[in-house]
Length: 157
Image (cartoon, rainbow, N blue to C red; front, side):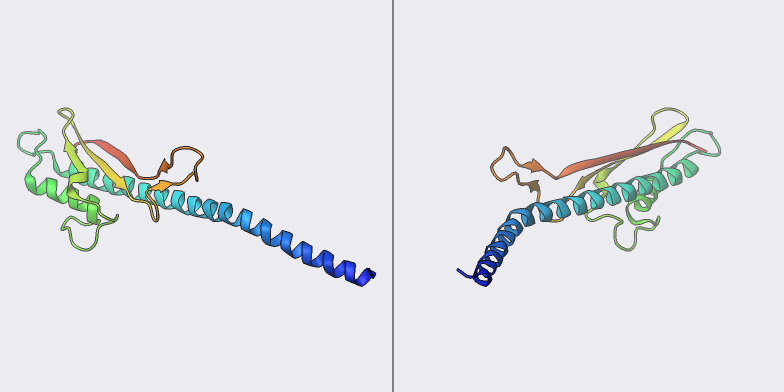
């Protein structure tokens, strides 16, 4: 064989090796990119949930104290306003919710003692693509769906 033919054969083999390497590495890279995006999305939704519960709790704490008896009174209207503020970002409850499928049932109001009010959220996180992270036969798949929980307790003003 001539030297030129050997170089041509060597280049063809090199291209084949590069294609095999790409086929091996590409699924791992895609999985890493999707996992990173999913973690970022979960963090953003948890941050939104925490801020919304804090806002609803603050509204509840500033309006729950009865001026005449100086005791905590949570009226149905105040409960609705606090939950609307946590879910929609406004006390009227108009527009779209701050999080997808953020329901009234995910929020719980409580009066833990004579001076404090609390608002608790249990929000079921829905992943973007899959409910489980596949391990391709290397054990049980990892569930990606979970419940985010956050709460705030404030002294009634």
